[in-house]
Length: 171
Image 1 (tube, rainbow, N blue to C red):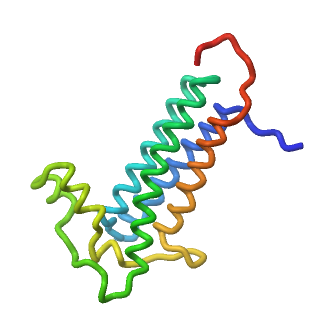
Image 2 (image 1 turned 120 degrees about the vertical axis):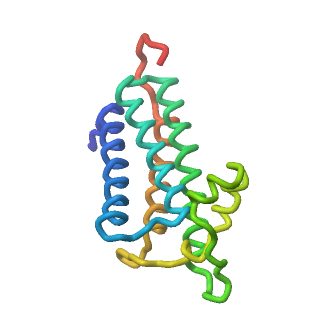
């Protein structure tokens, strides 16, 4: 029989995993001089959101309804990351003649355009988002993030659907 660790332990592991993902992204950016495209930055934001959800959950150690809420928040953040990484993988799979032209940088867009318009432009993607500069086992970074966000969604579903042990607390 497999013993599953307590939720608090899983949240700590999840937070450390998210921290490792961000540390890896920063190594690629600053150590290997691989500048992230706007879609990469949005995926980082989703990972940071999930990591913060896990950190808060580890600190408050929720039960029952609280675990379901943490599961739902995890699913929402991971689904956003999944959508962005899916779009990124799709852009990387386009033939060269169909790749959108490179657009302005994210900093410029945030300074110049309203947030909704900036998000719309970022999600359209650009030529820099279609470049594949690294692969592991045949998957690019956004491909791996697609897998990781899917795993986070499954974890959130597990939290929401698992049997709860009764306790005398609201959360």
